[in-house]
Image (cartoon, rainbow, N blue to C red; front, side):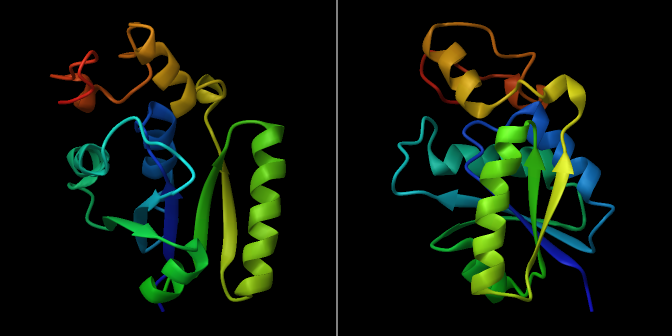
Length: 161
């Protein structure tokens, strides 16, 4: 049986922290599904198409990565994809508490799906998409915080590539 993991997120935008977790986790699973979630409670900064495009630009060369979007419960998406694992990156103890609660609820709903936590690399502990968006809103340079493959051609004022 293949070990299939889902790495859900909004990736708004994808950061070097996301990239690091993804590249470090591909050797742990036979297949990694990067799942761009549609969250009705959140107003995205970048369009779904742009975020999917960035993920494809970064990871299409990886044979065991699938990139897609979904809506609804992550555990239901996992069932459809026959994934046994949900991968989550952790930066801080606050991340752990938040993710632990969600992971435990997911476990109650679907006992066969395990949540796996991967610690971020120390240099990304303060990095989040929220902070990157705030820097962008104020005209700052975010090139140090997002993968270089998506920096090229990015128009920060118009938020498009």
